[in-house]
Image (cartoon, rainbow, N blue to C red; front, side):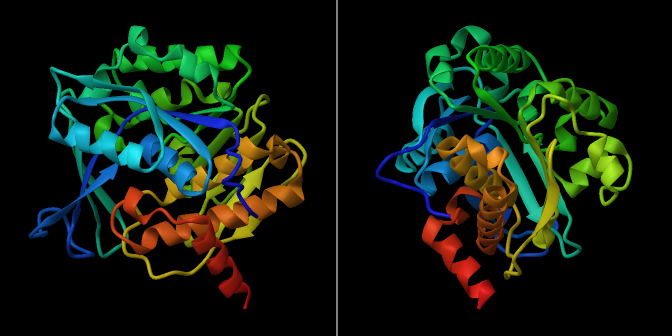
Length: 329
């Protein structure tokens, strides 16, 4: 699969949070055990926007950061990555969100968030750059912006405007339980916009959480499918991914790499997938093309785990192609 950089494909507008991830400088320790942390830019929708441009695609980010050192640093990183920042705002009265993230020895990720409230939670509907949204070919979002007002109303208005303009809606719920008041609130909130999306990507863990059932059981996965959905993709970590549409379903193998930090792997996967869809929407209906795209997305997801942090670890097209080639060999 090749991405043309000379002729950028349709615009993907990514909506939601951008924050600072603090990652322990030593792998396999809990947050309490860590002696020092490495500062890394993060926030799933922002990671996706950067993944897209890293692969030669065309992306914009809509969200809010604090009028502080971290907020300006994050916007500079977006700009350096070639992301359109016309939809980004600075809040004078709230700080940029912080998250401490670690991968413990048992492979479990541990999150601790500092947002009380953070700037991303305070984006208002009246502050949305609707013109930018309406230029998109794909509007991509997560679920964290649904947790509280006013960001929830802004999210709903942005989604409604995109849908009315005939733009493809892409949803990666990115379940972060410590941010929700309860598990029930998280399930209800995440599912409240479920039936609006054209494309949904969930991890096997998220399937287990949302259904409270076995994510390896196809019937359980299909309980998340809805009539308007063009494609549902379940990522299974290094095992690869499964895909489900109205007319076909299947599995694409993943890649074995030396994993250092899994933060942002799903975002690298989604970015790679959306670049391809923005260039050619037929990917969603042509199984052979889809499998090629998912193979490439799996490679991007795998490579992103080989370095610390999300955005710094995002691979280029040539790196992903080299991994695919070497695994064939």
